[in-house]
Image (cartoon, rainbow, N blue to C red; front, side):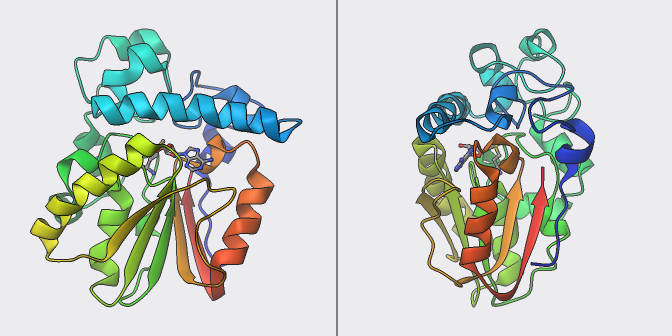
Length: 245
Ligand SMILES: C[S@@+](CC[C@H](N)C(=O)[O-])C[C@H]1O[C@@H](n2cnc3c(N)ncnc32)[C@H](O)[C@@H]1O
């Protein structure tokens, strides 16, 4: 494992038991999800809360559209409920998902090759920008949401490579799978697949992945040490990790 970029842990979420700027259940802004649960039952209850929030987001199509029901991310619910649509999850409240993506370094070409509905403004960074992806590599995206970073990674690894997105929210996985048709139309590629699962128990074979990426997800896990053990298990020797969080 070579590369880690963990932004929230240092700047936005300095405490492992809380979050300095956020509230609610999205984008790692759930102080209870950040706390280490005492039992696996509590861990499951926390995942259930997070899953319920992201189901609403998958259904509405953007973070801010779901914000009144699903609580806020950064800056409080009052600012978010005032937004008509769009709005970045961890960026300025006035940004649309497209503006947020451009501001954190996604190129115009990347945005053009990704299905519009895969970008729901849920990113807090740009993991593929630091992953140095090469043709033929196998990439695993933890908490893939609507598939945005998978669809950015797909053209970089090309037809000989493969991207697997894992997410525990069924509505997100369904949405990502629906986005596949637009991705194939826009790129001519069929190298992305989505699997339902928890990042604490990855539905991925040992040593089968070259690069793990993740965007704004690890902070939501109730058992982060287990996530890192799973990352180590699925990575092939010399594998890399590029995390934005
Ligand atoms: C902030 S969104 C980020 C989505 C995507 N990475 C993006 O940037 O557009 C967090 C995603 O992680 C998923 N998630 C949260 N905790 C998870 C866990 N323990 N296992 C699997 N997926 C999880 C949620 O369902 C949600 O789709």
